[in-house]
Amino acid sequence: MPQSLNADLHCHSVVSDGTLTPEQLAARAHANGVQLWALTDHDEIGGQHRAAAAAHALGMDYLTGTEISVTFANTTVHIVGLGFDADDARLAQGLAATRGGRGERAREIARQLARAGIAGTYEGALCYVENPELISRTHFARYLVETGVCRDMGEVFRKYLTEGKPGYVPHRWAALGHAVRWIRDAGGVAVIAHPARYRFTANEEYALFSEFRQHGGQGVEVVTGSHTSAEYRTYAAMAQEFGLAASRGSDFHSPDESHTDIGTLPGLPAHLTPVWELLDHRILRAPQRPVAV
Image 1 (cartoon, one colour):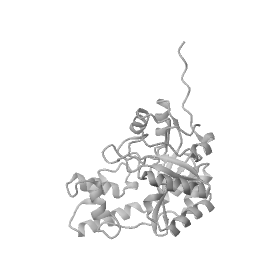
Image 2 (cartoon, one colour):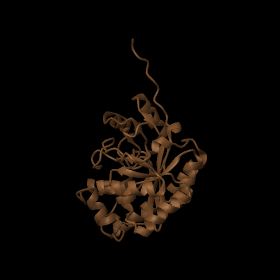
Image 3 (cartoon, helix red, strand yellow):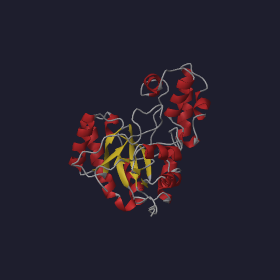
Image 4 (cartoon, helix red, strand yellow):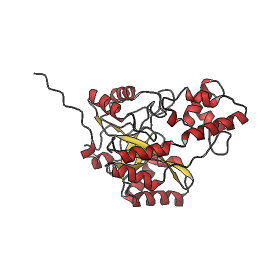
């Protein structure tokens, strides 16, 4: 597949913390010219068959996807899996175990917010969740915006949901090696998501990339919604240094919250290997429509 392909390989639906259904996301991606799409819900693959069917109905090729929460150097890191078998039992079990701690974490977030004078947030956040196993800070943030506690999502996170603020509750997620192995054993490729977001020191970042590579990770998001143009160049260089393929994805969650729409990113730098080249045999191709005569 060509380097210039409009591929969006990172976005979220109501199955995790997005606001659109897989079918609505497929329609939005198609309207924006996406040719190869992946739905990558957090720690969940329950929307994969719906997403693939919706993509194919619109003539788009599809790659299975998920975004696994990992703890590395006491920081939450996200690993995107692409092109795996969506019915793989060990991957499903690993993701279920990773989701397992979200409920108690959410209740502790609510307890801390109550101590800060904001009551009823657990029940409020649940109103925004289709899958209670995947309740997250994003759902609390939507509730606090809707009820007027904060003006927007950014203010919620700055005031309440980041480290050192009332409402921040750390969680120990999957181990990096486990997440990469689940993806690889299911036939997929593991990708470091939005690496600039982690604010690691240079040594910590080098350790992340090194360990990821040692476990069999094969890709890194270079062009993604939260990266600047300077960060595109930084992680293009990191991809080359570590021999990683490059991925591209908007990390789209919602028309009202995401500053980068699905399918609207610039292309990958020309000197990099696109991750879809590694996954050519795993792409679920849209059925060919008969040509009218």
